[in-house]
Length: 149
View 1 (tube, rainbow, N blue to C red):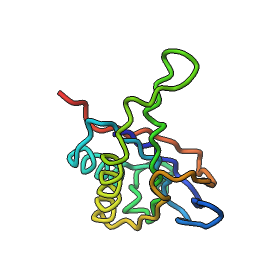
View 2: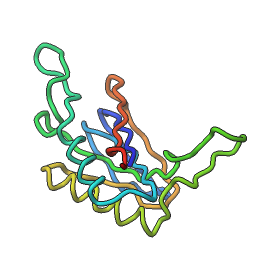
View 3: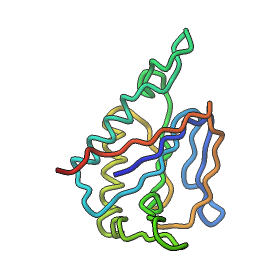
View 4: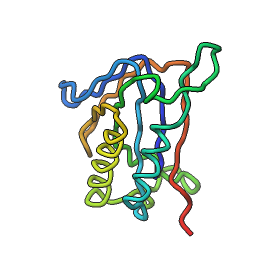
């Protein structure tokens, strides 16, 4: 599992002219799943995101989590995070999970974030989406699940 965190001042997802999710301050999460991901990966990454310290304290150091700071989540499924560009000119998406595997895991991931006290807005799984955000910082971090043994 691979998630790109973008700290944002505000963000939204629009599908076919309709806003499906919008937040003020918080994180935009671009969420990629691979065929070997499990519910354990979902739990690990959700906890990491809830706990990671990306918000400044009174001294300007990143010492607060989104739970401590306050903020919402905009979660967007993004199979292209597993695009392999090592060979040729067209990315291969063979490492991305098939929709029947990825969608339930993405939904479980969003529920797991909510279990940490976070409000989660979403895009629509599998849709062509317009994602708009004002990146704060900018702060952009990649979080991945533990390597499989």
